[in-house]
Image (cartoon, rainbow, N blue to C red):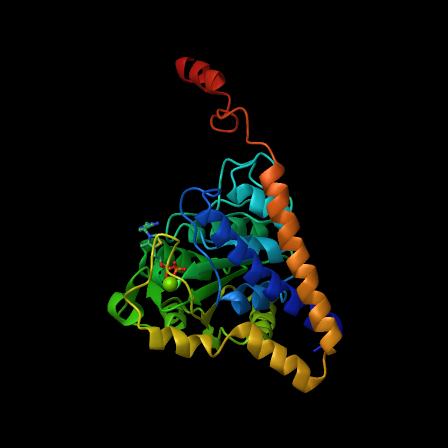
Length: 326
Ligand SMILES: Cc1ncc(C[n+]2csc(CCOP(=O)(O)OP(=O)(O)O)c2C)c(N)n1
Ligand SMILES: [Mg+2]
């Protein structure tokens, strides 16, 4: 792996872990309201897939999307301010944790409804196909979302129209408190694509290099005009489903076993073994990430709340009313 890429990946994963820890602390202090779904343990999935994508690609993610937004270039300040509900947030403070958005960067959400990402992704994919654009869509979803009707309907249409969509399953084995073998008849999520002629594979989602390489191959397939691909990343979340969930349905032993396969520790060991980076470079990346998170919290604290709550809620309501009368 190239030095520059190894450094970027390490920085991304450390930033992701520290950002989410800071978000949990700020939530506990009452500065973040509503639901907050955190990503520790799953970092290799967002980082490995998005660092393998091109900057012109589109990203559609779920409510567990802070890290996708950060890797895709939304600044830690703009993400943290959005969690705080401040006007300087990437959605103007109107969206919050589950609705991060940046159209200019082609980051199209942040969706709270399970299975909502699929129709949005195939809409963009359809447009890319019509305009013969070279870009792809990365569509993230959890293992639980594979049971939704939108998943099957969208897979069918994406295959039928050969849309350039990479479906990325973040299989963390739980749908809130329900373990995967209790919520789906076929727990190998990538196999769900076979009914629609969509190729796919499962990859170790705790291994960022494996995720990166699998994504490169998958995106090559998608960009060559072959239609969609379904990449299933097996991963694990260390915390409960959201800050409201203590996660008592899992044994301490299960969590400890998965923590022993931590994606950041694993990558750091690999970097040392392969000689990709020096110890000083790792430490430098860590302190830069720490400083970025501290600055983000300060920025969010000092920012102002939005003043006009009606802004962007209605599209010229009077015009619509007049149109209806006519
Ligand atoms: C249509 C719909 N049904 C139910 C919910 C409530 N809900 C929120 S998250 C969630 C679990 C989803 O699990 P999964 O897709 O595996 O994602 P994870 O949280 O594990 O990342 C449920 C059922 C919802 N938001 N939308
Ligand atoms: Mg899940």
